[in-house]
Length: 247
Image (tube, rainbow, N blue to C red):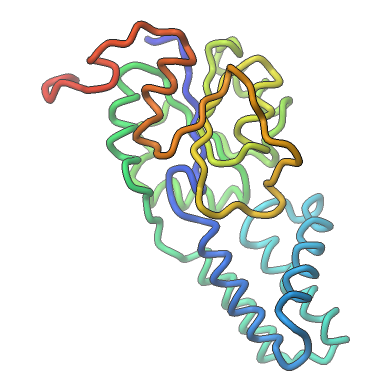
């Protein structure tokens, strides 16, 4: 078995996620139009999400509770039960939204699985993440699936220790510099940043990371070559272009 482990993020790396939150937040702002402007709503909701992370964690359920709290605060308690019910429905729709794989994901994972150990390393609500992983049709590709409460140095180190992998033999692939790349570089691993066109405000980093142990690519289809470069492998056609009969 290959000694090198590739970790892949789920939301906005393998499948769409943040765009659904953006659409929901627009509907939420419209719901509160009788009381307050959209900019104020957005700012207050973000503050509530940041404040509530330590209690609710990441995911739709925490987002929904923050929407309810923010609505009550911004309307001074005047919001009616029907609108609160609509907010709850917004959350249910997010939880029940179909999983849509990003272009190139299936092909890239099929290619990587022939050369590396693969792990899906994501964060958020355990039940929802497990549901999305099952619905994605990708679960069998991964040696291990980890749903973390937070993606930090300690959490990544524990995952690697469990799998018996040294940090220099670990590459994390994801869309978030804050959660997928920075902590892995800190523990001695390498990373491939695959930007998504929308980034949640709480995933932004203050300064861009420029590190020789990181590659930034435009598409997940470019990930195999980036990993190859980071691990210092001799480029071979079999790594980047599988033979149809390769199993």
